[in-house]
Amino acid sequence: ETGVTQTPRHLVMGMTNKKSLKCEQHLGHNAMYWYKQSAKKPLELMFVYSLEERVENNSVPSRFSPECPNSSHLFLHLHTLQPEDSALYLCASSQGVKGSGELFFGEGSRLTVL
Amino acid sequence: AQKVTQAQTEISVVEKEDVTLDCVYETRDTTYYLFWYKQPPSGELVFLIRRNSFDEQNEISGRYSWNFQKSTSSFNFTITASLVVDSAVYFCALTERNYGQNFVFGPGTRLSVLP
Image (cartoon, rainbow over all chains, first blue to last red; front, side, top):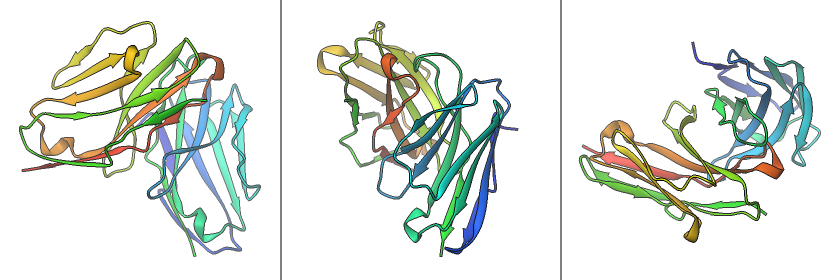
């Protein structure tokens, strides 16, 4: 079992659907992240939670709504998405302060919006 | 502002060749951390190495080696005697101490190792 688990691995949704991506980390880390990876674009940081508080929100549209109920779980709630939101969504966790801890990634959730 | 550049979009080599992946970074912080990650076709980014700004010593791990040069703001990655299993996208990343957990990734270099 990997240290960071993401479900579902693949998701197809219509523009009017509501769905959620789930991430769970088994590493005892204190920070969790959502990244978006689109074709031909660098990894984009979406949200960062440290000790269950959101510390980064990189101008992400409100149709993406994160939730971090505890230090081991992170959700990304999706509603009324657009086709351009189709991408690989990667969850990561880290331990350490001030950027010194490396990120551990899950395998990603491949989202297709029709 | 922090920025990471990987000028090589795609590289193809034949197995057993050596290959170097370039990474150039920009930062105004005096304390920062550099990373390399590998993304195989499965999608998961795999951590390879972390370097802090105070440690310019080059590192070797098996067939992998890293050359950190602050004078040129570069952190290059060399694979010696490449194998087909090295085929992946490789990302260089940077965090700054004053900006905590904001990892900035380069665009990645796709390496194809042909048999």
